[in-house]
Amino acid sequence: MKENVFYGVFITTTGTPASAICAFNLTSIDAALEGSFIEQTSANEFWKEATTVLTPRPGQCTNDSMSLSESVLQFIADHPLMHMTVQPMYGKPIFVMDDEELQQLELHNNMTEIVFYAASNTGKVYKLFFKNGNTYTTSTYEPLSTSEVIWTLKQYDDNVYIGTDFSVRRLRVINCEKHKWINECVKDPHCGWVNKTDLLPQNENQHNNMCRTIEYIKDNNFQTVNDVYTHESYDISITTPKSCPPDKPQYLRVSNTTEDKLQLRWIPGFDGGHVQTFIIEYRNEKTDPWTIKTVDSIISNYDPQIYELSGLQSAILFEIRLCAKNKIGTSPNTESITVSTSNSGSTMASMKADRDESYDQTVGLIVLSILLPIAILTTFILTKRQ
Image 1 (cartoon, rainbow, N blue to C red):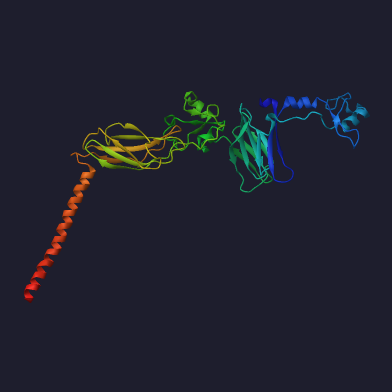
Image 2 (cartoon, helix red, strand yellow; image 1 turned 90 degrees about the vertical axis):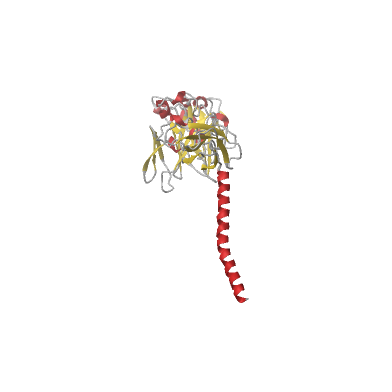
């Protein structure tokens, strides 16, 4: 399709700055240039379609321009306009920008998708992706420290080269790692979102960024996995809240223990725009493999969550950690906590009650030890006076 389409950028000449990119079918352009001319026989008449065309037709090549007759040259001078107008494809511009003037437009070579780079009079470069009649702004680059007009713009491999009155710069324009949200990632046809976090190496910052280049995905055979999203498998035309993996849960602690149960509490983080579940992992601190429990969010996202681990061995030290998961990905794990089940069946609540009772008895003894000498001394003084 790109081979049969001409793309042009247009700007306003007066008033508020604005820009538009339009697409024109080359077949329509050829038809207009091969069609009728319009003419104005006098200054007081409207332009109308010319009924005759001289030979050779204006626009056709000739071996000797000096041999053209005076009448042909006069016809060319009197007929600068064509009768047929060329309408843009889709009946409207494919991209409109207010308050800026786009100076240069470059189409990315060697791609089946339609990707533009547009340079502005304020020193910005926009990466644009056109699909199904809509244009999406994939990235905005501001490579210059001051607002300068970009006069030249050329794309080569993974880079775009720009030129101003004072400098020449190179921009890398395939940088999927900067997309932190799936909605942004899939609108860049160079990128794909690896939704299944266990596909990524542990040494990569997988929880905060799962956007990878299409080349990376193909090299690692991820394209066969259903959990890899690209602009072809994700509906980018729907405006949705930004989606991302959930944030790490906070304040994991144990609020009660018995000989075979541990009651856990934590505060959930941001759910990433989707329903989240919680993955509890626990094990004997030294020997056992991790046991995994999946817990649904049963109350409001920002209220404390409570879950009771049961069926545990008594008097055993357990290591526990927690993460959150939604349809986009998984959060980092919390810091591990270490806690032991009791060996007597007493709960933390009963132990607290025992402590409170012991505390009350201790306070009573202290008060008694203070008041008793005072009472004896008072009795002695009263006896002496008598």
